[in-house]
Amino acid sequence: MHQAYKKAAVLAIITLLGWGGIHSYYRYTQDMIYQESTDSLRATYTQVGTSFRLFTQRNWNILSVYEKNIQLLPAEYRTNEQWKVLLGERSQWMYRDFYLFDQAGNYVTDRGLRGQTDSFQAAVKNVYEAGKPIISSYVSTSGVRRVVFAVPFKEPVTIDGTDYMGIAVTYDNQLVERLITGNIYDGESDCYVVDAAGNVVLSLAPKSEIPEHVDNILSYFKVHDAAEEKGSLKWMAQGIREEQGGSLLLSLAGRKYYTVYRPLGIGHLSLVGIVRDRVVDEGLVRVRNATIVALAAVFSLLAFFMIGVTIKEARHRLHEKEQEKKILTSQKEMMRELFGGMGRVADRFVVADLKTDQYHYVENLLKKSLYPETGPLSKLVEEVSRTYVATGDAEHMKLSQLLSKEYLVSVLREKDDLMRFEYCGRQKQVFRLMTVVPISWDKKGMLEKVMCISQDIGEKHELENLANTDGLTGLFNERYFTMMLQDKEKKKLPFVLVYLDLDQFKPINDTYGHAMGDKLLQETAKRLLLCIRKNDYVFRIGGDEFTILFSMDFDEHMIGEIKKRLKEMLEKPFQIDDHTLHVGCSIGFAAYPKESVDTTYIRILADRRMYEEKERDHKER
Image (cartoon, rainbow, N blue to C red):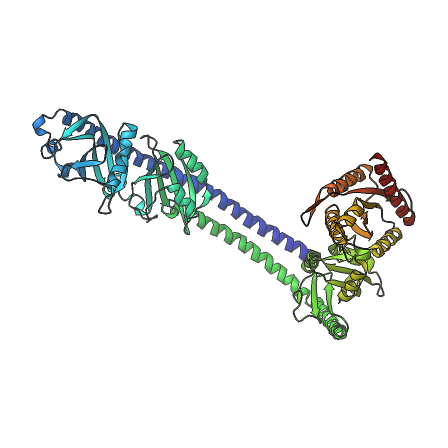
């Protein structure tokens, strides 16, 4: 057996090392592929940026020359028909339209067209604001996106009585895309010119990966839930804003894209390139995947060899397994007989195998089972502990402790041993009794199986609650208070007892009537409950007199803090039926077992100290 375990351990180690090495190699090569691919993309888009910058500068330079020539035109040539003789051949320049425009957006073209459009006006309005050449884009009235280069006049030019303030030339966006990027990356890429905020000024590549129009590239990624594989969109936004370059890998609509960004050197514009990952790194990924397949094959062959050796040894243990099956069959027969008998007397029960961490659950009372019929015992215990808490003598322990394997082994040593405790629901008023009995032990005498029997005792607890509860405030009553003191004394559990009596209660009761007094007592009870923890108790023992039992050791500083909190809570005004009522309280403390091991004397001592404080406060008034 030990040899088999050793070989299994060696096989596990080899497998872990193999797959761990493959995973590490994958992560390392993934980073290298990303670095190589982004370096290549940056170089490509640096060239694209340079081409576009030269194209832009050429248009601005030509427009500046034409501006000077128009300024020098004789008066007879300053008409809508004559000024365009300066332009030369349209076919050589390949532009769409040549404009003169004024500040109101009125324009005249070299083809004699005149008019005013909001889209063109918006595209060239920055000429007036910046006072320098600009580049922009707009959608024409025919729905075609145009790129516009514009230069402001130093002095207005009058043509046919209209003062024009600038000169511009436009191109179809598709023409600019063909001139600058051509069919870069086989058309599986997009390229944009954006401003410092990420707003798209124009496109420099035929749109293939993002077919719809994009107003802001950063917002587009955010709205479409682009996932960051490498790099960060936050860094990208900062880089564009501060005119710095960078790259990232994004997952968008089920595809991955390399994204690079770099400053153009024109105003505050940047170039953003978006390329499908497989277009860039397909060759490197193929090499990486082939290497991983080879490594996996080597480790798999080694694993198969070890498995073969393990199987050979397993055949040697078949006889022992057959014996174990016979024993298991016998135990199952015993369990069937046991189930049949328990089904007639128990509401529900669980047979738990502590060795295998498995259980079998049977529900006899409810139509719907509380838990799955079988499963891991540890999960069942965890679920029960989340739903219920122990009460009575076992209330200081969690159910997960009471039902743990270690605790059961320690308390169930003989066949006649049993463990019994009550428990209740954390949220619902459910009360049950749990009885745990041993069923079987293994060859070494270790407890192997137990039966946990659960019985509903809700009616018993409901009757006890009625007997132990004050009908007016819902707090525990004096009967339960006496029982709690006896229980604490029996178990030698330390506590601090508080006696509390309301001040000014009788005048309020006499002035406003007993109904108002009852409401004041109910509100007082609510405030007192806010001053305790879940293992402390509040009682009304008669009239306007209350007691509080704090489960704690004597701590003079803590007692002072408790007293201060109680007084602050009860001295706040009560708003009842449009009346503002003011009361106070007198408080007496006593600590068990520090001041006495007799709970009767502790009760007398706390009561006496309360009345001493009441008399002292009365004299001071």
